[in-house]
Amino acid sequence: MKESDKKPTALQEVLRKLGGGAIAQATLDRVRASGAKASLSLVYKVIAGTSTRQDIADAFLSVAEEEAARRRQVEQRARQLVAEA
Image (cartoon, rainbow, N blue to C red):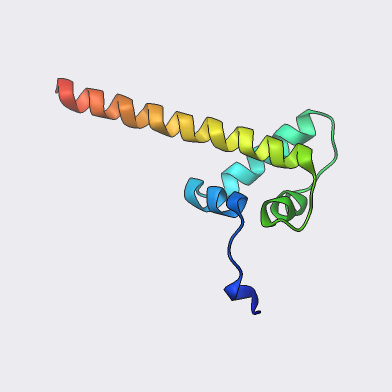
């Protein structure tokens, strides 16, 4: 099977929908803040499913959930402003 035929992992889909690099960097920052050693390439390996560091996967999902919630809040605020205008 060619690499282009591989189905993206769920984490890769999340990364794609949220825009990528900033989410991965925020994940790395959070992992490092907890005192664990990691690199950006390791974050991407966990997202791709080729590494199984659970702490990184958990940090990634937390960052992604926070970003998704922030975007929903921004959208809701924008709709409210349009309704009030």
